Image (cartoon, rainbow, N blue to C red; front, top):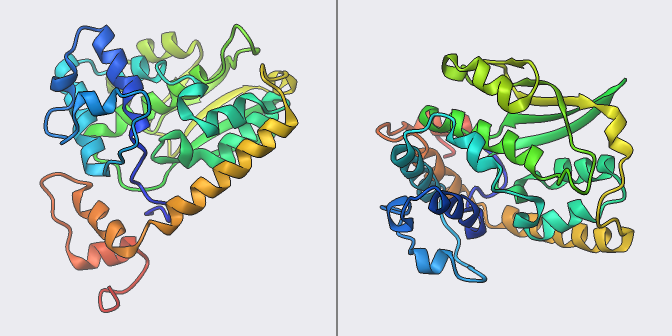
Length: 271
């Protein structure tokens, strides 16, 4: 299902991955080839440009091609601490407890640069962070995005300041490419594949842990700003932009009007 929120992300989504690639020895210009974005603009102290989903896909394909690493998403997810998300990150860090912080993630997930819908739920003895499909991600990038976002979710909590989330079980919505041992080593728990949704399940005992910057007033202010950001993103997402994103989502495939209308939950005649 196509999201009702603009999939045009703030350019601050790219620098953490770009810096991580630089640390591994890859040149910024090679990482940005074909995106139309200059490294100098991207690595400026306060980059303000926005970029399209097509440019984002090109950037991540570049990283996968350069590294030839099928587990690159796991490695780059660690480059996204909570602070990298701006106001959303500070709303998370200043929440009273980890339970409140994860509720913030569920409420304002689109501000975390993810292309998935994020939901947090709590059942007897366990908490679950769930990532569901929100729009069509090209098959050649699905594993990368799933791995990056789950690894980033775990990296967002600094174990030096907050009781770390130690997964009891992880489910991934891709096949794992016969690398189950690698995934279980990374997550430190049993991992299942080809799930309808990706999930991190963990002991609910950590949910009452106080957050490092706990401040109810600060968290409330940041959450209010997050609401304004989400409203602005929603208002900028017109039908033309949604159609354009569906067209570029699958390289080499040009969808017909019936396909696009179905994704937008309308009729071909209306579209």
